[in-house]
Length: 251
Image (cartoon, rainbow, N blue to C red; front, side):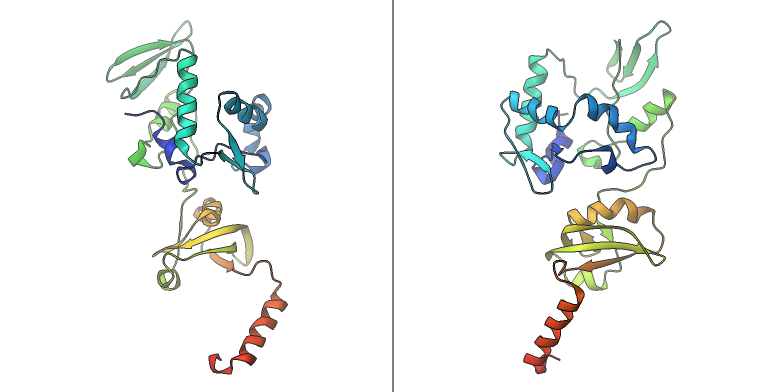
């Protein structure tokens, strides 16, 4: 019903529009190099210049994430909508595409509940099924399959981690900086650092989101959280021993 609803929800309403360290090595999946042609043709510098030329100031955080200077996702959406208008793009909302059929002599016919359209080319950017309240459906996968593409098995990603609720439940709402390690079968699968937030059923926050893809595919995994990641283990042990010595009643 409205252009850019999902965009407004990105980055907790701030819209993380790029990353200074964007590279194929930071992509996941069986063929991460698939992004290389796109990044080579229009990289991070081009993206930031595109927005700057249209009056949108951006700011980069220490981890490389780029946000609008206003910290508001609607600033990004407004810029893109104005760019569409300037390019003469016709926007159609409330017009779900139900089928895409290649023409015998080229082009495509798009069919929906409101009728049909013909196009020289089609760019399928329907997004995933996440966030159904914002319009996420499986239509993109279904349309891709009808055009001959194969879809890999779906896995949760960028979501909170559900754990044994015994400890997290008592810490519900607490936020803390930590290093989080995902381990299974005695080996570390993935680790990252950042803010974690405890929930009634587990752990959320940016650092949990970063590990969620790997966690969704691991069996019998466990999480190890280090809340003093800037201090080596011997130093932490010494601090605790000094605390016990100073306050024996706590022991």
